[in-house]
Image (cartoon, rainbow, N blue to C red; front, side, top):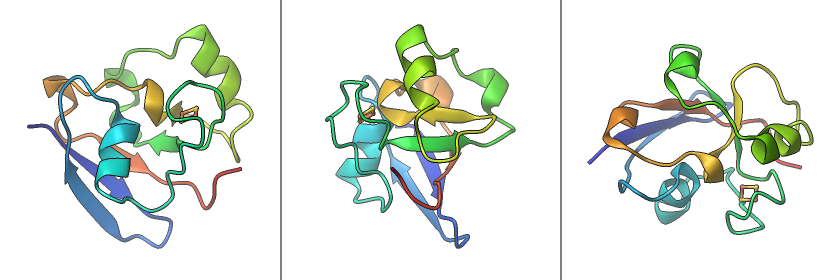
Length: 106
Ligand code: FES
C-alpha cells in the first residue's frame, strides 16, 4: 500500500496509507489530514484540495490535465509544484510521495 507524507506549514508530518485507484485527496480525507477541505468532493471545481508537490517529486507525476491546470491557478498562492490532490490518482509508483500543505485553502 503506497504511503504518502503530508507536511503541514508548521513542519509537522502525517504519513498515511493510500489506496491504489483512489485519489490523494481521498487518502488525506480518510486519514483526517488537516488542511484538505475538498469542498467539491473531487469534481475539480473548488481548488480546496490544493497542495504543493515536493520538488523531488514534481517530475515524477503525470502532468496536470487542462481542467486541473486551469483551476489550480485560483488556489491560494499557487506556485511551482501546485496540484489539486483530487486529480492525483494513487498508484504504487506514488509510494513515498511528499506533499506540502498550503498555509490555507481559499
Ligand atoms: Fe474540489 Fe479537488 S476537491 S478541486
